Length: 232
Image (cartoon, rainbow, N blue to C red; front, top):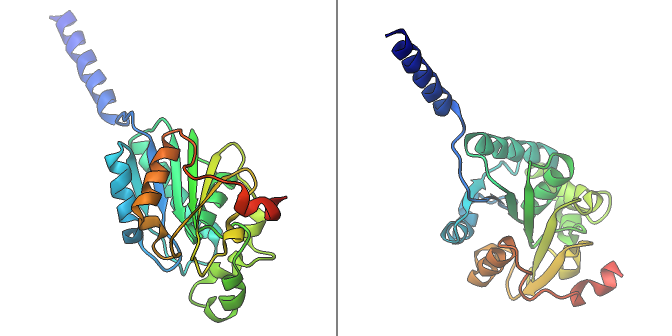
């Protein structure tokens, strides 16, 4: 009876440990980060496309009225950390649009998650944006991070390329907010698609390109042509 009691006690203890252990999930996690003035709804088509491809997806929301890119990135990082604590993932990928791409680069430079995988930047102001130069003085009271997207002296320019992460850039040829040459980033694969800035992340073609790249393939349509003069 004593031995039986010890056996039951051990079984209960093992069950309790199993109950508190984070659930295992063999799928990679993809973190989506929307653009300025948008919400996670803008990334829903990308979310659906990646889930269908077998990924776990964390579609993060943030307040574009936050005081800085750093503040937004810290919030995104906390959500990623919480998601991984609940369900660890083999790798963590990122897909962002516009301001969201700068947030992703800040996080990958300053506080990358364990096992950071690949990142896709959609219409990213990697070299700042001429439109941010134009409008920062007028809208910075509503969207303070816009001042960090300027072509000189801003976070977008100063961050550079995150180390140890494979990057892809997808630029829109009719962007209107970020020039194709402003999307160029040293060390990143680069492709240009027919689109405007606002809806590039919703294009089926773009979603397909993201799926290929996150799956370990080369970025479809990648070319050095658009960035040759900018990056030398």
